[in-house]
Each structure stands twice: as C-alpha cells, then as structure tokens.
Length: 487
Ligand SMILES: Nc1ncnc2c1ncn2[C@@H]1O[C@H](COP(=O)(O)OP(=O)(O)OP(=O)(O)O)[C@@H](O)[C@H]1O
Ligand SMILES: [Mg+2]
Image (cartoon, rainbow, N blue to C red; front, side, top):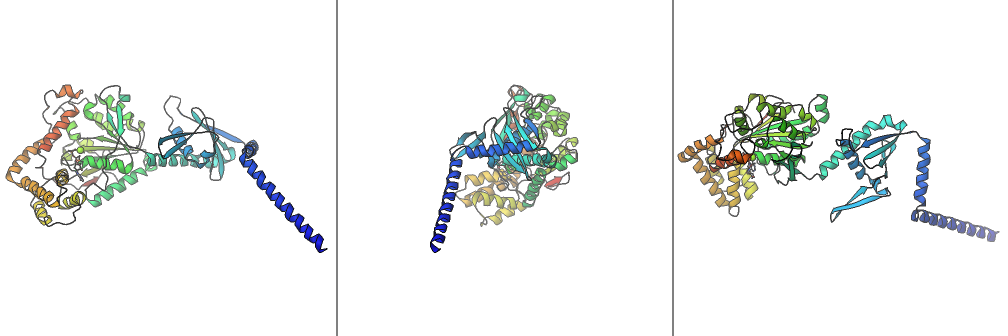
C-alpha cells in the first residue's frame, strides 16, 4: 500500500516536471521562431473579421498640393509610440553618436490604444491609414486626434533647434527667408530688468501659449504683439532673444528696408511658420521714411498696419508673436493707428540704468553683491547721471579681472554724463536718437537695394553709439509695462 502510494507520487512529480519542461521548451521555441508572431497575427485577423472597422486616411498633401499639418503630427506621434519597436521593418538613423532614431518603413503596421479602444495605423507612401472600430469611432476619434496634436506639439517643443530667419534680398518672396541656427545665449535670468515686470511678462507668455482655444473662441488670430521702446543699449534685442529661448520659438528678422512693397511684405508674412517671433526693429526709423520725412521705403504705413493685424496673418498659421522696437523713449511719436488697442497688445519700456539695475549688472558681470564704491555710484545716479546697461556691461566686461577698476570706470562714465560738456554732447545725441530721420548717407540708395538699406540703419546706430556714453535721460512718463488687452 505504502509502496503504491510512493510510486503514484513519483509518477505525478515526473508528469508535472515533464509537462512544465515541455511548456517551457514550447514557449522558448515559439519565441525563438516566427510562430508566436504568426499566432498573434491570426488572432488579430480573426478579431478584425469580427468587428466592423472604419478606415481614415491622413494624406501628406491636401488637394491643392500644400502640406497637410496633421500628417506631420501623426508622423511625430507614431514615432513616439513604444509599439513602434514591434514593427516588422524599421529604418535606423543616427545624426549623433549616442542618438539613434527609429523610422517606420512603408506599409508597416503600428498598434495603439486610447481610452480602452485599440487602433491600428498603417504607413503608406504618402499617407497614414487609421483603422478604428466603428463602435469606438464616435466615442474616441475627436479626443484621440486632439491627443495626437498635444503629443506632437510637445515633441516639437522639446526637440526644437531654434532658427534665426533673415531675408535674402534676391529672389521671389516665397524663397526669400534664409535660416541659420539661433544660438543667442540671452535668457530672462541674464536680462536685467524689474523683477516684477519680468515675472509678469513670463506669465503673459505662458498664458498666451495656453490660449489657443480662447483666441479661436473669440474669432481672433492667435498672436500677440509687443512694442519695446527705450534708448539704445537698454536690452530690447536681448529681450527678444530671451523671449525666443523661453518659448522655443524661431526668430524672423523682418528688415523692412529690404521689402519692395506691400504685396512683397504680405508674401513674406505668408512664409512665416507658426511658433515664431517676427521682429521689426527700429519701427520709428521706418515710419519716418514711410511718411516721406526720411529715406524712402517701398512699404506704406497702411501696408504695415495690415501686416500687423490683417487677414493674411491668419493664412500664415497661428501662434505668432510680433515684436516691434523703437529706439527712443517716446512711443507717442509713432503713428496713433499703430498704437491702437488690439494692434499692439503690450508696451514695454526699457529705461536707462538706475542704481538697482547697476547692482544687478555688477552681480552678473563681476559677482559683486556689495562694494565700498557702491555708495558713490548710488549718489551719482541720484544726482541725475545716466548710462545704459550696454555701456555698463562693456566697462565691466573689459575690467572683469579687477572689480574696483570696473566700478571706477563706471563712475568716470557717470561723471562725464552729468558734466556740462557731457550735457552739450548729449543734446547732439538727442538729435540722433530722436524719431526724426538721419540724413541719408552718400551712395546709400545703391547699397540698400530697395529704398535706403539696412546699412543706413546700422550706420545710424553706430552714430548713436558714438555718443552712447552721454545718453538722454530716461523719461518715465508712463509705467514700464502697459497692457492694452487683458491677460
Ligand atoms: N537690461 C539688460 N540686461 C542685461 N544686459 C543688457 C541689458 N541691456 C543691454 N544689455 C547688454 O548690452 C548689449 C546691447 O543690448 P541690446 O542690443 O539688447 O540693446 P538694444 O536696446 O537692442 O539696443 P539698440 O536700440 O541699439 O538696438 C547686450 O550685449 C546686452 O548684453
Ligand atoms: Mg537692438
């Protein structure tokens, strides 16, 4: 009896061991061969036959031959899916030693799931095919496409290499924009400006980024315009670079003196991609030329107003920021129509240095929080001496190995700005910084191509900078941040 029980246990153990070994070997065999893959495909094929499906195509181009934005988003989205790695054929690319990119081959299938529904994508030559169960379509299609948008935008934002786009003077408007990597290191951290103002600007930009639905609900183009005004060397261009780095937006440097006429301007605008900052520097200089008091430009004021908020803005895609700069303190000198609410949303004043901004610059450039010469510098600012952040920055940069020497050179510069001789010279500087145009330089028309060219603007700036040390005292009639529309 005991013997037969023992042998039964032996047989049972032996059978269990054999079954589990066979099971293990079977699994190993299936995984090592294509059989598991085939089994899965059959199961999917059977499931496909049970349900009614609907197929949706996302072509690369629309019927007019223009790129279909959704195609690119789907492409980005599919390449971010973990199931991509299960595809039968994937191309591998590398543009960096430690970075390998997987790229779907044609006619590959990628599975995805969303809100409990399973979906399949097939890659075509110039399209993507989405297969979705009819019973799920009504429930998930809209949120699924929205989800694709969000994920693709997120990827775009993270991997984006910024570009500075500038204008080529030759060729058709459609191919005039040239681009180069945008590597400007300016950030809101390195920019010296009132901390409260800085926070408000950042939150304004954040709100703008999240407001697509809000703008569209109001029937408005999703764009925001800024006017930066203040004397030369106060950080307007650095602010634009900081903005671009903060938002990860490309920068389009629109040089109005290279635009032949209003329709050329419109064509250039149509080529600007979304998520860009369009920069028009020295608006006052352009306006003086457009009104006929200065050198000519082919663009009219009404052409520029249309560019700022005209219908063509909507054709070139949403999510744009426009920045206009004026190199003096008097934005009131601008065409009133230009400043009307809704055309320029935010006005930011860039003043010359005060003692607080001097201290921030000393901390950034020299690592100084306190110094025995600080009280003397403070006294000079209180007595009305003025200097631009650019000038202080240069002096500190040159003398960075000796903070005392750097501060002494700043004091000397401040002294000369408040001396009678300095004031005399400053009045000459006022002329150069005023909104009245600078006389055209000999030969400028030929150099500039259309009207008076870029080089004239550059020379005008050099002229201003010659007297840069003796600046117009910053008038603080208005607050630094005027906002025409509600945040
Ligand atoms: N507010 C600031 N904070 C930090 N650096 C500044 C500031 N303003 C000017 N600078 C420094 O001065 C230099 C010139 O500044 P920027 O070109 O931004 O002035 P701008 O206002 O655009 O002058 P312009 O009107 O002549 O074009 C930059 O290299 C920058 O480092
Ligand atoms: Mg500038």
